[in-house]
Amino acid sequence: MRKALRWLLSFVLVIGTVATAGAATAADRSADHQAATDATDSTDTTDATDIKDRILAIPGMSLVQEKPYEGYRYFVLTYTQPVDHRRPSKGTFQQRVTLLHKDTDRPTVFFTGGYNVSTNPGRSEPTRIVDGNQVSMEYRFFTPSRPQPADWSKLDIWQAASDQHRIFTALKKIYSKKWLSTGGSKGGMTATYFERFYPRDMDGVVAYVAPNDVINREDSAYDRFFERVGTKECRDRLNAVQREALLRREPLEKTYKAWADAEGATFTTIGSLDRAYEATVLDFVWGFWQYSLLADCELIPDAATASDQEIYDTVDTISGFSAYTDQGLETYTPYYYQAGTQLGSPDIEQPHLGNLSRYGYQPPRNFVPRDIPMRFNPLAMPDVDNWVRHHADRMLFVYGQNDPWGAEQFRLGQGARDSYVYVAPGANHGANVAGLVPDQQAKATARILDWAGVAPAAVQKDEAKAKPLAPFDAKLDKQKMEREQALRP
Image (cartoon, rainbow, N blue to C red; front, side, top):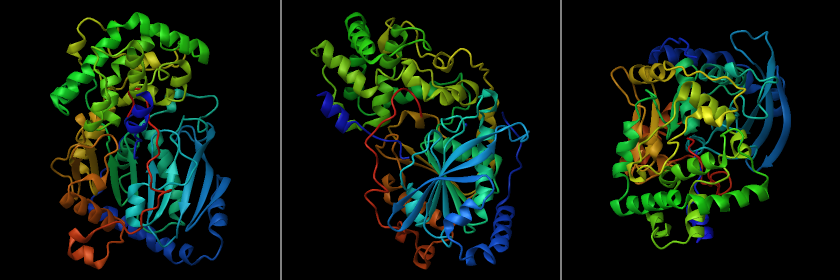
C-alpha cells in the first residue's frame, strides 16, 4: 500500500522589510518598456556574437555549465549580487541562475520557485504558452546562493525582489522583447512581491497557487476550508487516521526512533523526537489536500482496522517523518526564517483531535536554529495585499479549488487593471492554466500571449482560439514525480 500511495499521491509544485515603491500606471509601464526596447533593438538584436559570449560579457555573470537541449541553449550561471542592496559596498555573494535560451527575438519569462533552482532544463507553463526564453533564479540564502557569513537580517522580500530586478536589468540589454514573471506557491508569492516593489520591470505576472497570509494571527479561512473540502466521507477518513496516529503515539514513536537511529537523524532544532512526530502527524490532512486529489482518498486505510505499520506508513507517505529532523529542516531554514519574520504561517484548529495534541501547530521559530535571531514584521504582507488590490496591472492569479494554500488568496479591488483571479475546479497545489474551465483557460492564455506581445491575429480577434505557441515537450514540460513534505508552500 505504501508503494501505491507514493506513486499515486506524488505531485510537484508546478510550478521572500517593507519598502516603498510607487505604482506604475499602465501608460507609464508601456512607455518604460518601449523606451527600453528602442534603446536595445538597434544594437543587441543584430549582434552576431554567440549568445554565451554576450551573456558572459555581463559584469558579474559567470558560467557554471552549459547543457545541450535540442532547440535551446541551456546555461547554469552565477551572478554577483550585493548582500544588501541598500549598501552594495558591504559585501557580495554568488546567486545561481539558469537560462533556457531560445532566441533574443522571443519574449522572456522570469521564473522564480522561491527555493533552490533546478539545474536541469525545464519550462514553466507561461514559457511554453509564449514559446520564449526562460530565466530562473535561485532564492537568496538557499544554498549555494548564501552569503558567507550569513547575515539573516538581509533575507527579506525587498532584498530578494532587488536580486530579481538586477538580473532583469542586466539581461534586458540582450533579451529586449517583452518579459513576464511567474512562479508557483512561494514562487508565485515571489513574483507578486517583485511586481509590488518593481512594477515597471515586467509586462505581466502569472502567479500560481500563491498564499496571501495578510494577518498572521487570523487563520479562520483555513478552518473553513477544512470543514468543506472534498467530501465528508473523505474528510472523516483522513481525520480518523490522523487521530489514530496520536492515539498510537507510543508504539509509532518507537518505529520512528528506530528509523531515526538507523538514518542518523537528529532533532536538535525542533527540540525532541516527540515534537517532530506530532508536527508530522498534524501536517497529514493538510499534506493530503495539498498534493492529492479527491479520488486518492480511496487509498487511505480504515483507521479502525489498520495496523500500526499501516498508520505509520500512511502518515509517512503523505507528511514525511524526515521533514522535521535537523537534516530535513536544514535545506528549508530560509523559508522558515521568512515565514517567521514576514510571510506568516498557518495555525489551524483541528477539533477532531480533542486533547491529543501536546504542542498544536508549532511556529516557524521552532524550525530555525536558535542562533539565528527572528522578529516578525506584521506590516509586510498587508502592504503587499493592499498594493495588489489597488494597483495590480496585468496580473493573473491561479489557484486550486482543493488546495489549502488557496484558502487565503490574493484578491483584486478598485484600481486593478487587466488582472484576474481564477480557481481550477478540483485541483490541488499543482493548479495551472490548463486546468481552468474552458472559457477561463482561453482568456488566461490569450492575456498571457498579449502581455508577451506574441498574440496571433486570430487570438486578438477571438480569445477562444488561444493556445500555447510551443508544442508539448515530454522532458521540458513534464511534472517531476516528487513532493515537498512538511507544511510549506
